[in-house]
Image (cartoon, rainbow, N blue to C red; front, side, top):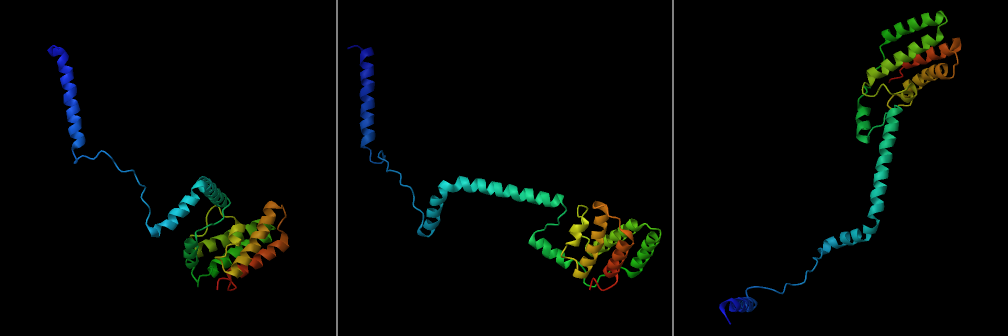
Length: 211
C-alpha cells in the first residue's frame, strides 16, 4: 500500500480514536435529560387552571370586547352630536360644585330685559319677545355654570339639566317649550304665550328660583 492509499486510513483511525476518547470523557454530558415543563406554584394554580379553562373561549371574549368598545365609542359620538352633556362620574361631581349657591340673575339687567321684551310684545312681535327672554335665560345660566353650556346643547337639553335648581329649571323649560312650539310646530306665540313666557322669566329671574 503506497502512502496515498494509507493516508485516508490513517486519518479515519485517528478520528475514530478521538471519538472514543470523547465518549470516554466523563466531564462531557451527552445524554441530556428530558425537558420537564415547570409547574406553577401552589398559590398560582387556581389562576392557571382558570386561564386553561378559558383558553378556548378567548377569541369570543376578544371580539365581544372589541364590539362593546366600538358600541360605547359610537354612543359617545351620538351623544356629543346631539348635544347631550355626558360626563364621567368624577367630572359630574366636579361640575356639581361649580355653581355658586348664592348666585342669582342680576335684577337690574333682568328688569331692563323685560322692558325691551315688553316693547316688542306691545308691537305684536311676540315671537321676538319670547326669543329675547330665552336668550337672556341662557346667558344667565352660562354665568352661573360657565363649564356646563356648550354650543351643541339645545334648549331642551338645558331644560333637562339636573344641575339647575328645580324652580329655575322648570321656568326655563316653560320658556323653551313656547319657543320650540313657535319654531318647530309653527304655532305663533300670541299674547297668551307671551304672558306665559313673561311670567316664567319672572319666576326664573326674581322669585328665589336660584335659592
